Length: 195
Image (tube, rainbow, N blue to C red; front, side, top):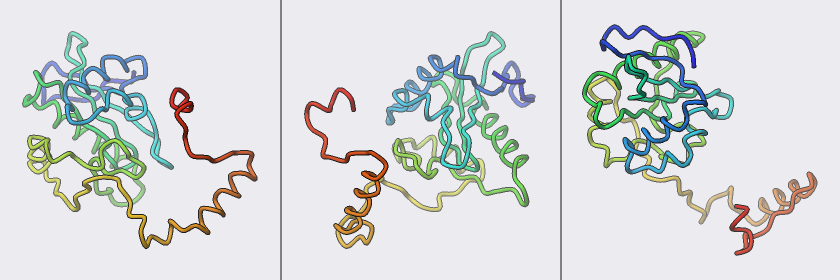
């Protein structure tokens, strides 16, 4: 938990850094708000995990009574997720979270303010963009001056005629892993529990 952020735009709302101790209510909120994603299963990583070189940050929106009503997670200039509890939507909470994240991202930038990216951060396997079924989410971002620059429908990679998917490269990577003491093999039924 961190110091409260200024949120004069929404009376009775306090924004502050979200801490790992608040994972359970945050996961419940994510499950309720993002019904097309299974984000509650990986909530800890999505809220608090980094993104390669970028450390992860999470903001929470709380009522005066201390109820968590919104969350936003970002890493660098990438907004990883934004969710507002369904019964608290359309009250300015998402806008306040986005404005606070934008201010933090711009304040931490060296040089000109970076262009924000939503939901397509490198390494994201959960949701490669804002699912098109979240029509209200798309409208929300458009209304706040964000425009779609590409559509990421899934994270599948073509393997046919892909220079990164050759037998020679696989052999080199296998040998490099073995040199570090790792064994690579196809997963078997008995590996399921461990996986």
